[in-house]
Image (cartoon, rainbow, N blue to C red; front, side, top):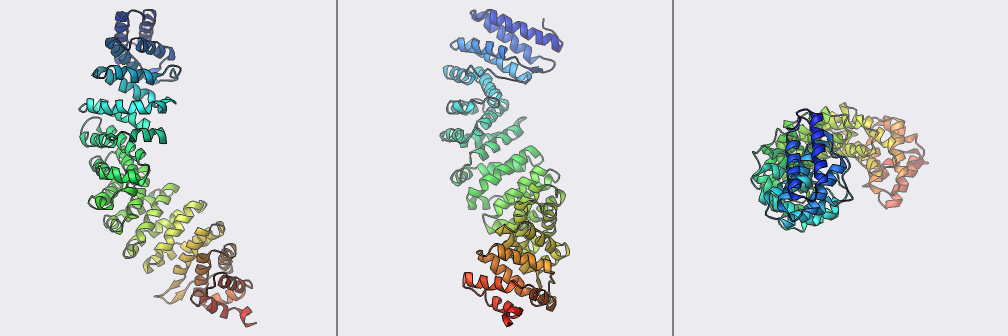
Length: 521
């Protein structure tokens, strides 16, 4: 009789493995010992901390020696899988023996043994995640795993193991992915699993694994379009809708969508409820940062594909959801980055600027919280530039210290041409209030910031032009003119811009020079 306590059970397993080692030449003893070890592992009161590498080697020797004996190979593979699943940590696996070669050759020799497939697929899942050599065997492993998807089409536990083994292989690098894509049925098989396993105990894990596999395989727009045409994006949207309250499925599906959308057929996307589904997923998990980040990323990619998606996203409350996420997770630089880009993309649509502009404050707050991040400054200042065209949004930005932050970003990153150009463009929008007939009043420090940008980037026409537009706007205020006249180097900068680009910038350069004292002299 076996022991009932964990220490005694570990000792019993040790004794069985030792008996196996002592009688490896007797197939009957070997088969019985493997069966005993398998049964004992399945009845353990608690998992073992780890499995001794020597134990694994002994069973692998048996599998290697008895490849032609179906009974022994079934029992030994079952014992090995039972040992793996009953251990918290596999520790060091015996790399000197080719575990994958033994598994592959055993399955090839006994292709009709359901029991052998069951155990070997489990072993592939167990060892693939910890072996550094798995990539070598991908070309041989993939067809076996694909066959298991057909063989166990109604067994969600086995499908789950096979899908997750394929997922591990899909993370093996470029060559592994290419080996998978050589099988014409591969993508269809993965999509089929998503369709079949919706309401089973393991369906959550299967859907997550399949979404990850599709994302890993989408190497270029051709493959993305192919997956979309085969129903990949439709299945992912279905998973999002069906498992909308499961944050793991939602996280994985949103990540996959963000990857696939960029190459998907626009007409297929337009026929789906993808905009509504993404927004709904974000609304269902408001305090999950990963969901919000991936959702904002998916909305950005989707909005960049076609103007109609911008309209639908705003219609379903996408701009508001992103704004709320940015406000809630203001400390997350990633959230601010993805959110700012998404709002920027939505605001490009002229008729949506006012609606999206209601979310401008969260962009300002994100810039204030992460002004030390150069990349985020590029994104936030770019978003403010786009949002500041709308009159109501201008007022909102002004009330929330956007101007001070813009000048700060220009000072901090004077060498960054993108930030300088976006900041100057935003200032040209914000410096004039047409309705109130007012002009922004500047300080000498503000002027120094603008002229420093002109001096640092003399060959960038957009910067020179935007700076001249801003300076020309400032001349509408007498107090600003006094500050401009105090800068002895400003006329030279303006003349240099005119000469460098052979452009008077629609007459603004001459207008500026007329209010500066050096011209009169």
